[in-house]
Amino acid sequence: TQLLEQSPQFLSIQEGENLTVYCNSSSVFSSLQWYRQEPGEGPVLLVTVVTGGEVKKLKRLTFQFGDARKDSSLHITAAQPGDTGLYLCAGVAGANNLFFGTGTRLTVIP
Amino acid sequence: NAGVTQTPKFQVLKTGQSMTLQCAQDMNHEYMSWYRQDPGMGLRLIHYSVGAGITDQGEVPNGYNVSRSTTEDFPLRLLSAAPSQTSVYFCASSETDRVFIYGYTFGSGTRLTVV
Image 1 (cartoon, helix red, strand yellow):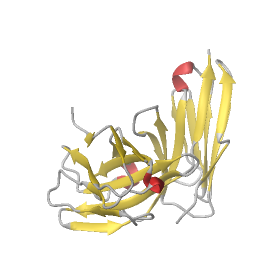
Image 2 (tube, chains in turn blue, purple; image 1 turned 135 degrees about the vertical axis):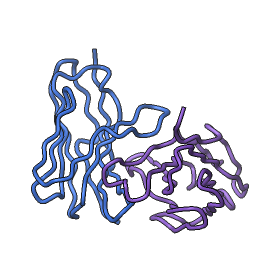
Image 3 (cartoon, helix red, strand yellow; image 1 turned 180 degrees about the vertical axis):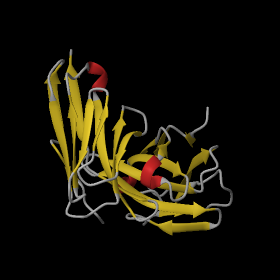
Image 4 (cartoon, one colour; image 1 turned 45 degrees about the horizontal axis):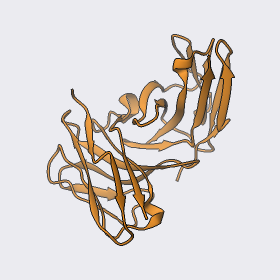
C-alpha cells in the first residue's frame, strides 16, 4: 500500500479567500492526479501532473508536483461556493494502479 | 451519455445476505475496478480487471468476488454481508495503460448499509 496523506482534512473558508491543500507521500509516483468529488457523485478528474516541479493552472486552481514526485499541492485563488467539495489526490504507480489520498473536504461560505 | 453506470444507488442488507452490485461502461474501456470509500480512509481498491476474463485482487478483497465476462460489465458480489462492509462503493474504468494521463471515469456510487 502506498499511502498518500492529505492536509488539512477539513477546511472552511469565506468566499474570496485563498487556500492551499497538500498531498504527501513517502513513495515516488509516475504521475499524480487531483480529483474533486461532490456529494452523491463519483470523483471527477481535475488535472494530471507528470514531471517533477511541474505547475499547471486551471482557471483559479494551481497544481504543483514536487521535485521528487512524492508530493503535490493545490492552491485555489479567490475561492467561490462552487469550489465546495472533497478534493482527492491520487498517485499513479504501474500501468493502471491509482492510490488515493484521504481527502480534503472544502467548504466555501458565501 | 457515455460513462459508467452503477446500480442500485442505495441498498440496505441484513447481515449474512448476499447481493451483486452492478457496473457497466459504454466507453470500450478494458480496465475496470471497484473501490470502497469510508470516512477518513480515502478510496481503497477492492478488485480490478484489465480485460474480459482477467481479474485480480486489490487492497481489500476479502468478502467480495468479481467476474468479467464482457468488456462492458464488471459486477461486484458480496457473498455474506457484514456490518464492516457498510460503505460507498465506486466502479471506475479507464483505457488500459492510459491511467497515467487520463485517470479514471467513475460511476456515481452505491451506498450500502449492512444492519
